[in-house]
Image (tube, rainbow, N blue to C red; front, top):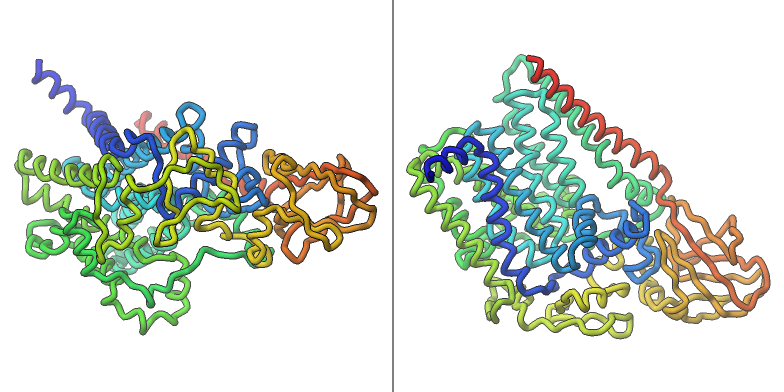
Length: 596
């Protein structure tokens, strides 16, 4: 009976691996999930606000969110469309069937599961070995760094992580195998673009370096053909991601926007020894990958060329992001200055982890051919990952603050206060001694986080004129003919990409009213005053809507409705056509294979 079960499992190997991957993913997230709380990191409120805006709009029939009217201080902030948002639809969609806390944690499970599955198939393209691919999936997909991404609530990097191996496998496939599978590179890069802009920049640069480094190893006769397919793949990725970056491009070209705070790599590089200290404590890259990184050179002769190149790739990547790299000599080069847009050099680390995991997978397959030994190593890898989950899940108190890990005091979940009150501009979310938001929420007080936003990113992608007035806009300060007054919360009526104000204020015809609602150049709006459209609203010095009162009234209902950036419809149509074309290509290939 047992032999029959194992025979069936071996016959359906992929399904078996998927079940294992899902089980491991669930176990990793379960320690967090069982607390039934979400714990603040640097960006928790920021990303949950984006998800909440998408969810509310979906619930009311609007599939695309152009501006925030229920979150982000209800001022019409376009941050919800300027940051990549496609994968946030998973979080928002699950909120229809799960509680808010469970929706977030189940999405974590799905992301880790997706990481394991994509990692497995990505390595399968390169190695042609199920064993090597399985080892790689475990080493890369269950690295302690991914657990740290959950803890720091940096959703963008976390959502981009699964697609990094796919992008590299796609480039490898074009350069050295079947270049007609160019769509693999497209899917990998597009997946990253749908998740996180800085990671996109990092991976594109890394892919370019990879291409240049191994250009000469391609078959000489078809190098041009392979380059053309890389160009096709890149162009197709841009088309598929128009829905994400198109609106941001329009708004950026139409006015000067505030950007996320850059961090110069030259002034604050990673200290490589700090990383070693963290990894010895099973943080950072974790003990197993640290061992492979430090002692890997002893086993280089035991692995094939691909494994050796992967090891050298990890060395080069860690060198570039470390304080050993001469940033002070190259930081003025234009391309390098542009890299400052990644904000923090730790975002380069997933590329290094991918390389060292690939090396480790080849080493396990070659050096430890015995299944018992290899399985034991993988069990240790998973156990260390699970230990991290328990460490940081608030299942018990901990005190891990050290000079090497200054942010660890943010991770002692048991000390974080419950957000039992509705956050307002005058009663904001509490902060830690590191000036980071410090709180936790359960399903009951989840909505206390909205609509006020006093966390990181609250001025991102606002017009520069507006950013200077963020506090008064958050307090709903309007200006009528030079006189300021506050609009009360009951007078606000948010809708799908719209805001209505019920003002019981005498207004004379011809006077000016400056609303606390951002007006973006390059975005289409409809403005109505008591049901009548105002054709030419102005932009105030605050970067907000400035209306000329069309008639003398004692009260008025004023509505501002965003229809998205100019060309937004075109971007959506082109992206949809691109996906239909890709699906058509897949169907055509499957039909031809069936015929042959």
